[in-house]
Amino acid sequence: MIYIEEKGVYQIDCSYAIWSTDQMQNDYRNAKVQLSDVDFIAETANNIYLVEYKNGNIDAAIAHGANFDPSEDKIKVKIAKKFYDSIHYLMVKNKNKPIKYIFIVEYPNADVTTRKMLREEISRKLPFKLQANQPGQLINDFEVLSIDEWNSHEEYSKLPLTPINNS
Image (cartoon, rainbow, N blue to C red; front, side, top):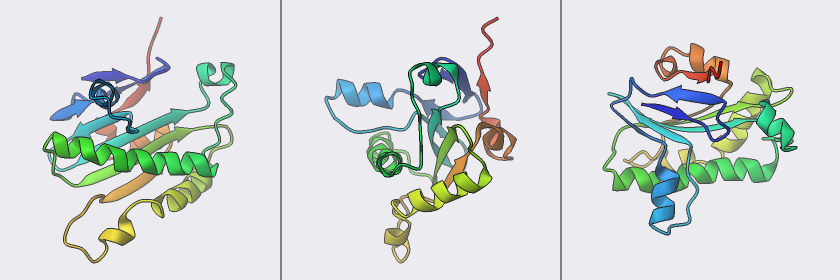
């Protein structure tokens, strides 16, 4: 299954996944539940990937004056909240595999160092410390990656995120 992100510029190919969806928001809306959601979920043989995607570098974002700055506290809180609100959906769908939450982000002047800082700051808002001495796991990993890092990663490259060719 191929899903197109909300601005219609990029697509993620989840054909490799054994189950995937981009319909969490619609399902929440139809149930009249006001929760935040990640953009895509993909289940493979070993993991469930919760994928949040933001791109402040595309023309549609720039044209709307998006000035997306993921270092703002409200953005970091929102990204963490999307994880917590998405866990409910996985429970309802009976999905019980290790969960990796990936924030794919592009914005002006982004680099490996700024993405690492984002990862550290958002990680503190996720349940890693809570589950440290507990038998269960809510989250197994969290990463903040660029599109190139996602596409070149041995594991994630099986779910490529690519520009849509409109020509």
